Each structure stands twice: as C-alpha cells, then as structure tokens.
Length: 91
Image (cartoon, rainbow, N blue to C red; front, side, top):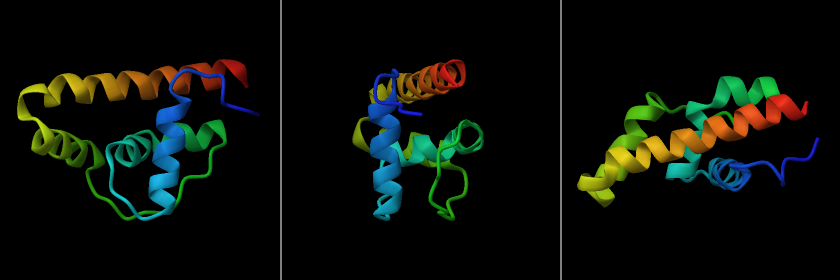
C-alpha cells in the first residue's frame, strides 16, 4: 500500500526517518505514540527504547515555546489520528 496521498503521511514519514536516524524529534515521538496502531496498519517502526513518548513530546514542544505547546501537541496528535484512520480505510 502507498501512503503518499493520505493526510498526515508527511509527519509519519518524517518521524520514521528520524527514528531510523536516532533523532528524538516531534515527528519521531508522534510515531512512537501511534506505534501500536501504525504497526497494525502494516508500517515497520524502528525499535527505540523511549518511555512516555507523549510526555516527552509535550516537554519538547514546551521547551520550544511553552505558550503554544498544548495547541501544537493536540494538532500533531490530530494529524497522526487522521493518518491512521485514512490508512485503515484505504486498507
């Protein structure tokens, strides 16, 4: 299956690349948050030992800009869920 046309694929693709390169970025943490559902869709997620990726994502966003961290966190999660739902429907 190809995912390029699905909403949120850019975020997931960047997260997968960052995980493979060993970078802890917002997209990488989003992928780790969605790991169980993304695996069930058929994506291969690199094994990275990160505990509490949701808390780590929020902390990363808060370090960048504490005032907008909550809104940006929610936007990233909505984008992840949008991709997951679209991929499940396309399967």
